[in-house]
Length: 384
Ligand code: UD1
Image 1 (cartoon, protein in one colour):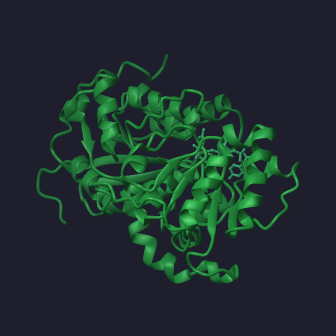
Image 2 (spheres, rainbow, N blue to C red):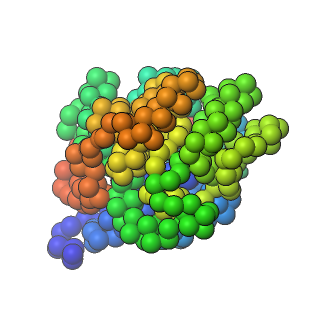
């Protein structure tokens, strides 16, 4: 594609910070690169920084080197968000930026969105509108705050459109484009399958289950974590389980005996994890993204939460909310193993082309109204 005469170049900054952000940003950055009037820079906040949580993801997803790394690291929510805002503000203040693109619902997403809006830079939120209705989850606060200051909303499922309309956002700024996380999956799946990582664990395809857990509600309460751990050990007697352990969970589990037939591993990179997922019989998780990935792959997903901001995975996909009910978990696992668990279907627009739809909108002529949004007053935000 070549730039037409008169096309104005738009300078975009895409902010990433934590593991799921990298998966969502990668297809966006490559779709933007195919539009000559979009010029993209990446800023990595450094919320995740380990080899396993960050660097291996950047490599597996071929994300270009970030233009800046803000090194915010770990800490309390206030500290992490504050550092993102302080450091991103300095970065944005020193450059010409037309639009700020933020993805998902992590602390870096919210910190970046607030910073952009206060500087009068239109904020594009990818994966906008999702709501669990549960404000005890930090991600729910991040979603609400991010959407309240965003200019454009790129939505992965119809519930997101409904939520944004209910909150009073104009229809003209809401775009149901599909799911960028599925874009990454579609692109990586052939390479991931070819890795057949289950063979290195001595397992056969469709013989085993995968477990991931990292939500504070599940892992920060020792009693809850112990009841989940015991259930996993029982299930592993019927169906081998592989559990790549998130650092937050590893810190908590360290105090509990891991035990049993569960295979506890370090966190895996994107391609290795997708390989593991693609060969599995079932998944037990509390992740948001994995509810979507299993729906796309048609793999039964038992979610250890009592709500989801991604209801389409329950309505159309393969996801069931189990909450903290370990008896229900074990009953559903028997259903899966006996072949009685329901089959799902792939939601509309989860087709690998969501990022391209977003790129076309951001490269197109219809964004002028964003400049007149309330946030676009240059007197606001610069210096108090
Ligand atoms: C964050 C997101 C969550 C997302 C998850 C994916 C928020 C509020 N939460 O949760 O939505 O699903 O990322 O992983 O933004 N740590 C390391 N190495 C790292 C990063 C973290 O060891 O590279 C450890 C630190 O001890 C840290 C803890 O993990 O305190 C939690 O990290 P943090 O980014 O605060 O939250 P996550 O639980 O990863």
